[in-house]
Image (cartoon, helix red, strand yellow):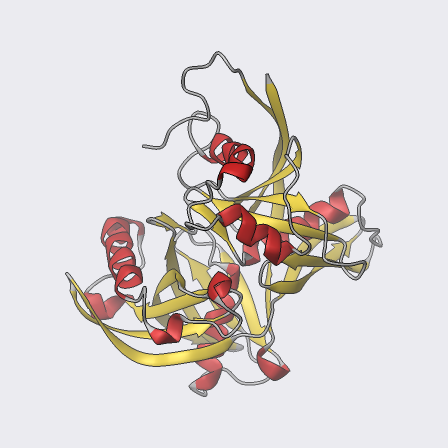
Length: 336
């Protein structure tokens, strides 16, 4: 009987399952190296020496213990003493190099668990090594309670604009930006769609088509190598009336093999901030009000040097001890 313990959060509606016990060791000198090892040479996350690690991922994301929309992270040692912890992000199809909503949940968990001391009133910084670099979650406190969390990402940059991509709904004009992972952005209305639950099947299909079409596009290549290269998510967005503080948009981010982000997508928000700033639509001191298809909200802003900050909330939803019985013929589970 194998046991795995987790603490679960949601950040603006998107789940994040933090694995605190039951992991095999993950070889590597850095978080990025551990991520590359976990992904494996074929990119499947099923390298023989790490099959036990991927068994844990499948066990937690697949039914009957999880679901196709599950997301989570494996706690690993940080790269050095400058960070409080390291993490490998995972989803139903494998691993990712960046996760803003997960970083926000980890920051709140680090304070909730006592790993990082926090004042009753004020802020506590939690430094986290992720595969794309070192990021920070600033946990906001008031009256002994956490009231919000701000994620400061690695620098974001625009890689390409107006890339034409053929889809079954027509030609999409796609902008590409890197923000810890590579994101392609397209206006939903250009494909005759709205960012509403009723259009989700078509939005997901369009996102998958765009991601496939851009698989070898030069703008998806990251100078630091293959780990950070390739389109990770496709952001289908619509523009809403500006607020007094800046632009207002709603999006759905389609990633992996058709998974959707229930939150406005933390790293994806960073990519949108870089694109808006480059167009002159977001200035210093302005905020992007960024909604998800579920109606939850992040606010984001861009700082000097392409650094972005995204603010939202994260709440604990449960603590779990998952079991895998060697006699269970379903094993680590299934996905429908």
